[in-house]
Amino acid sequence: MVKLAREVIILLVADYGSQEVVRRFADPFWFQAFGCLLGFDWHSSGVTTTVTGAVKEALRDLAQDLGLFVAGGKGRVSRKTPQEVEVAAELVGFDPTPLVYASRMSAKVDSAALQDGYQLYHHVIIFTPHGHWAVVQQGMNVANRYARRYHWLSEGLSSFVEEPHKAVCAMARGKALNMVARESDRARQGVVVLVEEYDPQALVKEMKRIQELEMPSRHHILMKDIRVDRLRKGLEEVHRRTPRHFQELLETPGLGPKTLRALALTAEVLYGTPVSFRDPARFSFAHGGKDGHPYPVDRGLYDQTIEMLRQAIRRARLSPTEKDKAQRRLSEVVK
Image 1 (tube, rainbow, N blue to C red):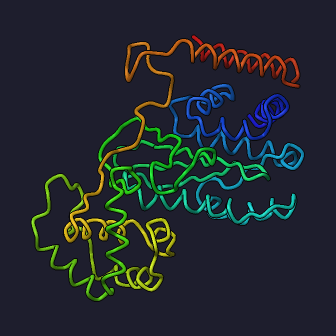
Image 2 (cartoon, rainbow, N blue to C red):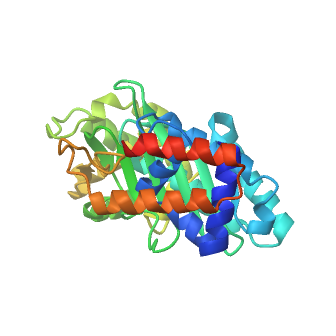
């Protein structure tokens, strides 16, 4: 997988440039097709960690020449992402600050501002020295045993806290506390006003009063499920920082999903600012199903993807044996 990934990436950079490669990693359909080309099952959650891991290893000695870097990974490796970005910046000579910020904010959004029941365990950022980047991260829901992948792209990103995703892909959808939905704009404003107007002690007191109320049935998470006393430290830090807007509030160290959930529900009761529970996930990873579920196959898109991969294999600098293996893998996908 590493050898084939290396040759395909070299070919793509040569033909389209490193920015286009970044753009493609943010496309969930291309990402899945690429995983199939490398020999991984499209329906396995492991495709995310395996593909990004193979690409990271493939570019280890080529990143500087190609102008394309990969940082992060699974579990503890994901927490080393800022340091890996800084190492690349020192090697090539660019300011790592915006990339480190993008990495941290995308992770913070998908772990706190979008509460869909999936715990992040994988985070990778693919970037160029010119500041183009894509983030691919994945979470796991231990209850339904499904994974969910989140794609981000710097190109066209106007806000980290309002409809920021290029795609959110999953095999199942439900309800989510979605503070980054467009319709949650008033809720985001309400949370900021709340932490400005109330000192932490008064805010905790209000939250305890709200716990005695009957909350609307549409809330899948109730105030009574939140242990308010444990939120005091986080509320004190947010209040001390006096954030001007929601994105600054989200940057607060230690501000986790429980604190944000309590703030969102409290702001709704006090200010009437409802938060969205719309799940942003697409229903399927793939091109569709031959049985029409979740939607009919787009044959034009499917054929275009296959032909692009065939051309890549034919032109890649691989041995005849490796080319034959890659062609056989692609043929199995086409069946």
